[in-house]
Amino acid sequence: MTDSTPKQRAFEKFRNAIYEFDKVVSTTTKLLRFAHALHIPIYVTTQTRAKLGETVSELQPFLTQKDGGGSSSLHPLVAADLDKTLFAMYTPSLASLFSSSPSSIPSHIALVGIESHICVTQTCLALRKKHPNTKIYVIADGVSSCNKEEVPVALARLRQEGVTVTTSEAWMYECMGDAGIPEFREVVKIVKETAEGSREALRALGPLGAKI
Image (cartoon, rainbow, N blue to C red; front, top):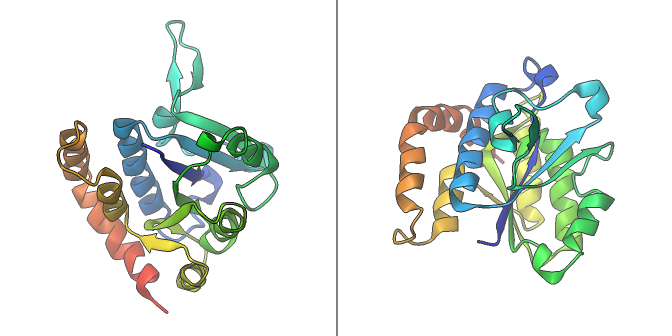
């Protein structure tokens, strides 16, 4: 698979500030499980980690692994884990990684995280400018902002910029494309196990993606 999942991390300090923060975490968790099942590379950024902290604990098991001595290291699927001050996650370090070889540039990129109108939007705009042949997706049930009213405006703008706004489950099945792939049963298991959380996320965040 050449699809990749860059992800803006969800920080603990934002838990009580972001609209339906826990739904963003739930959708991100589902997509990380999917990425593990299909061996899709994961790109991670933090925003001024020293001030805003690490990612929320729910996501850590999918981004790290422990060795026999109990020490943690990045999971092999995490292709980059970068701290930044730029609002866009397309930093010089990530640009350098993408330009290291033609095969390093993903053909598809899906984004989840916060905030929709700032980091997510600026990441999409940077990727569209630098890699116009890469298809960019924003997962509507996996993004949010402090002010929920910002979300539909941001997603409407991104559609105009050529970004595809879709749902987590739609993107997962688009990535697979065929029920005959070996990983299909594992993905169906993920979908079933996360069904209730997916419904709640869609009820809370899905309508924001459909407005404007």
